[in-house]
Image (cartoon, rainbow, N blue to C red; front, side):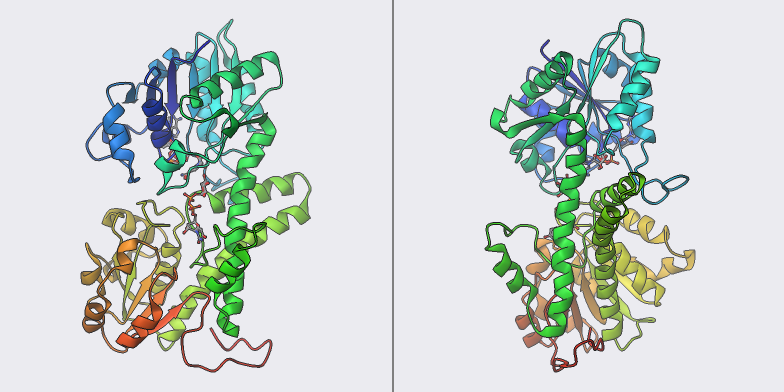
Length: 475
Ligand code: NAD
Ligand code: UDX
């Protein structure tokens, strides 16, 4: 069988762009993306898409109404499809067994139940969501226990490796496509059918097939390795700040070793996003359940180091401002978890903003792509209602910094590099501070303008280096 109709369940950051690129590259396949969220589907059908992703608007504009459809009629789309992608969210559980660590699979399970209930013909069901290893087994149990007579299912694992902000680029030209399936004639046939979809634009050598469990675990492993690199370089950034080494120089020096490589060694205020922390927590939980406490502790340390980094940066801001920020006006530039996205899930900016609010600061926040309502939702969700009048959201960076004591840069948007810092200096209360949480600004130039500058992984002030090993008086 050749796949002619695809249903993508879940129209979020993964489901939307992934299905759009499949529609772009496979004009002979009809792709229907469905979601329980009617408002989101309406946005996908409008001029203003629900997510910001460079290049996405153009892809959707080209395919929507041709072979790409966004719908709330999940049953019809499932009924008609040969192949179904499950791209629903798998957040960290907030209650019960595994609370705060295990992945909550209720949305995946709901989806499996609807598929079983609706399908009257054989289907290939593809896990695209990130799930714990052996989740496919649970999905299969649900499908087999509820299916209509004569209908059979093949479950494949096809994790998504796109990064937000570069999703279209990653989907069009991926490093690899991973497909895991059952080692049986039916399983191999299903793998082949999905591989043929990707072969519309991806060469066969890049399509890597494994057993289902390897594929599921590889997704958690990839995110764990990537996050581990960031925590590793961030841990060294703390050493740099005390010793006078520069973490960018250290990263370049070690990155030249081809065994280490140069990517993902950018020290920062800490990693954010909806995946790294969630997937690490899930991995830690799985290891604990498998009675592998040493392995669990190993990966837990990657998360702990990230918490330490965020807290170190926030403390640096507070201590530098004479240990009191009460009623001080502080500009936060960047609220998204990285540049080129409007996504704020687990953004380090939330942590920094919350720490400053807890100390009584008045925040002036600006992000090029994050709307005021989302900023307020994030901060109000973890604060008392009275902090609301200490949060001001601006539409541009210059308005945000006016009359502030300090500028705290949390997201590495390109436009922050290009700002007129002389103008900014003239608008700020003196002494004017800049805390560069992404290490993207020209610090020497800023110091020459008159700013007091602090950053990650590099000592910029004139305090002499402490020679007493073990002393922790310096930030
Ligand atoms: P998201 O929250 O942006 O989107 C998920 C969508 O699924 C939501 O719109 C939600 O309404 C919908 N949904 C939930 N239950 C549903 C149901 N029963 N029927 C129909 N729709 C339903 O999440 P996301 O960021 O797209 O992530 C989806 C999955 O992909 C997660 O498992 C995540 O770990 C994984 N992933 C995410 C990224 C990323 O960069 N965001 C990258 C790779 C993998
Ligand atoms: C990540 C993985 O990269 C992707 O493969 C997976 O599919 C989903 O999770 P994403 O979270 O969208 O993608 O963005 P990513 O570029 O990985 O950045 C995650 C966080 O790490 C961001 O906060 C980013 O600023 C930070 N980061 C990244 C660093 O601090 N330093 C780096 O060197 C790289």
